Amino acid sequence: MKPEINAAVVFLSRFLRVKGHVNDRQVQTFNQSLHDILSEQYKHHWFPDRPCKGSGYRCIRINHKMDPLVGQAGQRIGLTIQQLYTLLPTELTLWVDPFEVSYRIGEDGSICVLYESTPGPMTMPMSMATSSPSGNNASQGPMVDSRHSCKEELMVLGRTSPSKAYSMMTVSS
Image (cartoon, rainbow, N blue to C red; front, side, top):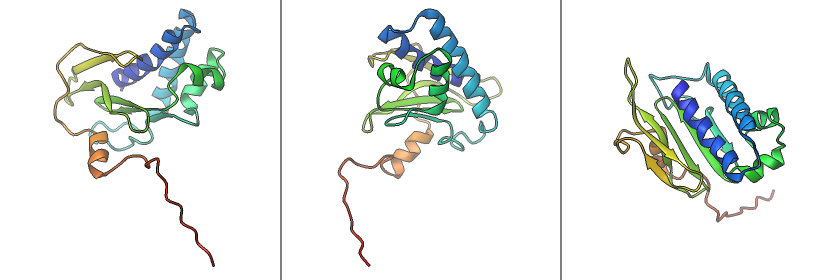
């Protein structure tokens, strides 16, 4: 669980660094706070034998509503929810699952893998891609293998979020 949480925390904290309104000490405190919060939150919702189980619970979501765990870590360094909205992407989904951490920016964005490892007695990272908030990827290992992830399974089943074109139905009695 620790490498997956580390990957998620480092990814989010890069946004704070890039925008430049947060000093190094605040970023360190944010990192430690978010790591502690996520570790406590996921402690009873981490299933390495069934990585997709609990994926929705471990999903970090920022859209019209700030993810409460990210908001809590931000408040520990003196940032308001409004300030976090200006520093983080307005539409972000971050999945923290056993053996894989991936994200999507925007409702229709591609899913990108930040961290992936192989299940086993001694789990060694297969790839650890460091993505900058600008979207550039600098891979430090081989590309992601063809193993099905939780997100791929959702994509096979259909769209994971509603389309922007909504149909309204009126019901009268």
